Length: 505
Image 1 (cartoon, rainbow, N blue to C red):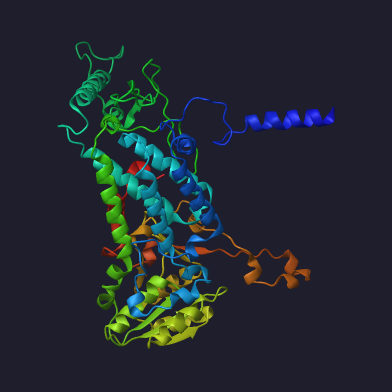
Image 2 (spheres, rainbow, N blue to C red):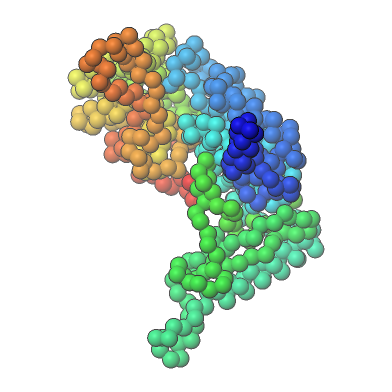
């Protein structure tokens, strides 16, 4: 009958849908694929899975931004009398450092108790967690992905410092080293290119640039299998020498694009990432504690530089509300700097009103202006301070919507533009999408009232209300961060110090 057909159709459609919740594989999950992370946690660590799901729910509902700071992360800036907590209803005034601190705490709570054995398994676990967080809205908060990349860089750094002398037992070490020697022999074999029929006689086999590049450990494909006790490395094959080779040793490796995008079945790691090391967990946890301490002291380190950039008699212009800029200005005022602040109101959210009120209560001479008066007032301004949503790989800045016109007006009047941001906002992403990079569109109700949409003229108008602006690096003169001041041209060096290039995607 009809109901039977409907049920069978829905059942077959559900079986065809991919995803972690629908699976026909009864084999135990292992850490060989980021897609298996949720099932692996469900089978082996249900408490950690509960923590992940709670974080996902809080992130989706926006509870993290209004919650209290996690342990070890008391509010920096409270010593300067900040009242920003009263302005948390304004979206740019929310303490984004809370999200970052909660993310690090979540990673610490999952990495510590779980039973991973090698750096490769831990990296797979982190990549799977990043995909989980991305799918529930983490793409709107780039700091979440940045913290996962930061921890992955820590794991890679510890794995690269793997001591050849031991830590995991003599027998296991010797077996692992023997397999690495076998891999090295295969690499040496694959580095030799078969002479073509047109090659000169007597040349024999020789190296080529392509074969040398593809023989790099990052391009060694591992056949992942569940690691048994005492087995550090599974069977390995070497990627083909050339792109067009049809040799039996050729392996098709698709580029892995993590953090919410399609991923290949396996991720390629160097051979020593599959070796067990007893101190790896301890060293990674210590490094995560250092990251937590860095986040705790983030605003303090930024505020200590306030007197280097704000001087007596200056007129400083800022846009809308930012707790980082607010504490930066208040710290300068607390250190006997006498200056004037001009705050753009930041329509349509008008966060500048809350910013001006908070600064005036701290005794700072503050003036609020309409956004339309930015260009007119810019000739009197000595310096522009802008907040940051993200700092991109090319040195560009993603800031609250409206900041781009401020930067353009400053450029026209040769006024220096300084962006104040913590290093957790450093994002290894290039602005290939222009103004749409890390941007989002929200309801135009704050721009035009719905009751006016009955007008025949307005009904034909398309209202666009973006959340952020992308500012090119040519419009930014300096970034003030918790580790110092840098020009946009130096960002690429910071990326290399904070993230591994394989984890950028």
